[in-house]
Image 1 (cartoon, rainbow, N blue to C red):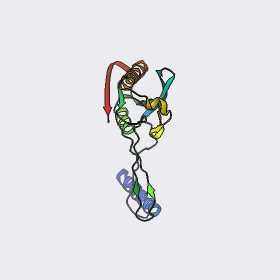
Image 2: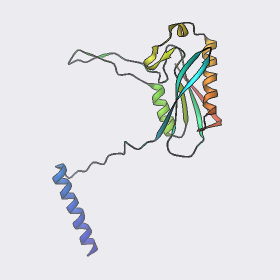
Image 3: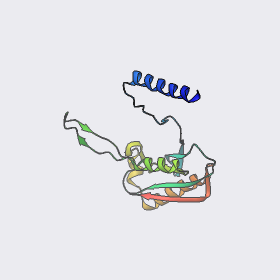
Image 4: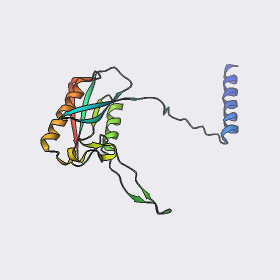
Length: 174
């Protein structure tokens, strides 16, 4: 009797899904609203009145402190996401399309989903979308400034409560 009731229930549900969706195929969707990463915006004091924006990403699930990773930008104007725009012409409309690539954002997401706390920061004088905010600061940038900036960012990363200061890695990209 139980097996007959079970089969009848399954067939009923199948019939209802056919009426609602038009086919016997049911699609299962992932929970896109499940938070896997947390974010915290920070400001790093680079000295001499220069500050820059930064963001720490870390796992929403699991118990920290987590191993820390500092993402260090290379040459050129770079925001914390290392945003780079590409121009493409739409063949149908002739309009320009600018889909940006954001490798540091993607790397931080990937690593934080896998158990790492990641700090990335805007290069001095640069803001979102690699916009130069202060041409004087950007124009007078030296290699020593970049070394000092990454050192200060590293110290900020180490001080975060979500980060294990004994497990730190640095990733540079250019």
